[in-house]
Image 1 (cartoon, rainbow, N blue to C red):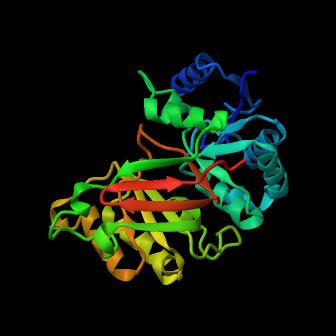
Image 2: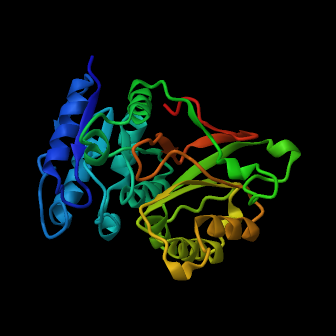
Length: 316
C-alpha cells in the first residue's frame, strides 16, 4: 500500500510554481500517493491565502489521515494564527500516525504544538526547496524522509567540525574524558532561531527543562544570531538545557568592520555563557542535506571524539 502524503501551505504563498510541480512529481516518482490541499497554491498578499484559508488548510491536513502532512514551503504566516489552531486535532492526528513535517516558519507551529499538547512533529524538508530543486534532490534528505515515512528511522549521526577538537581551537566539546559523553532521555526541541525567539514570553513557547535544543538560521549575520541567542539566554532558556546543537547557519555576508567577528566568535561566546556543551555541524537547516528530527521526542545525544549521534528509536 502506497504511503500517503498530504501537501498544504500554512505560511507564505508558493511563488516558484515550477519547483513546486517538480517536488510533487518527484514524490510521486518515489512511489508515494500525493494529495494536494485545495488551497495549496492560494495567494493573498504574501501569504498562501488569508488567515482563515491557511487555518482551514492546517485542519484539513490534520483530518487527512495521511502518513505525512508536508508543507509546500516556509516563509512567514504561522505566528499570526497560532491562537486559532486546533492543537487537540493536530495532536490526535499525530497520535494516530500522521507526521507533520516542515522547517523554517513551521518552527512556530511545531513548538506551539509541543507547548500545548506535548505531541511530536518533525523538522524536515519542504516540497519546493527540497524535493523540487532543479536537478536531483539530496540523497541523504530523501533517505531520511523515506526512513520516516516507512517507520525505519531511529536516529542520525554527523561529524563535528575539525575545529572542535584541534589543540588550542575554540572549545565546542565538554571538558570530559576525551570529549566523550552521553545524554539520555532528553526532549529534543527547537528549529529556526528567529522564529523560536519570537515565541519567548508567549503561551506557544515550550517550557522544556533538561532538553536538547537544536537551532538553525538563514540570511542572518552573526551579530543578529548573537542578539537572538542573548534573548534566549536572558530569558533563562539556555541555562535549562543539557545541550545546544547548532545546525547550519547560511547565506549571510560578513563586512569589513566586523574585524574578525564571525560565527565562530558567537559560538565561543555562547559556550562561555552556559555549562552545557555547544555542538556544531548538525546537518539541518536551509541546506540541501538535511536530516529529519523529532521535535518533542525523548532522545539520546552521544558524542565520542568528532562523532555525534542523536538517537530516538521508534517514535510510533
